[in-house]
Amino acid sequence: MQPWFGIPFWLWSVAALILAAVYWRVWPHPRAGQKRREPWLAAILRGGHSLVWILLGLACALFGLDQLEPGILAARAALAVYLVFVGAFAFDRNRA
Image (cartoon, rainbow, N blue to C red; front, side):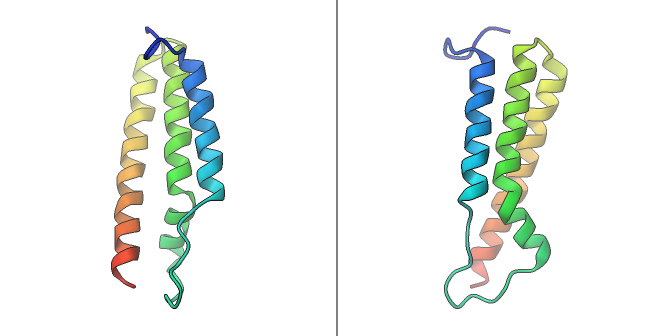
């Protein structure tokens, strides 16, 4: 597979893993005065965005190795996790 914007896929993979580490460190905290989150919601908000970037990094690594089918599967999994994360984030912000 050809590099994306002239940048090799392994470099995209490294960038995605760096973003995963950043989002693991910086995550949505409850608002002041907001009641404690349910465990399922806390888990999704704590690790969901990082998992998305890990899956995207995996997809880029697989694309770089010309493994298109597994790469597409990883990218679709990232999309599914992202949709769950956004839904949980919206749910959390609307219940305050």
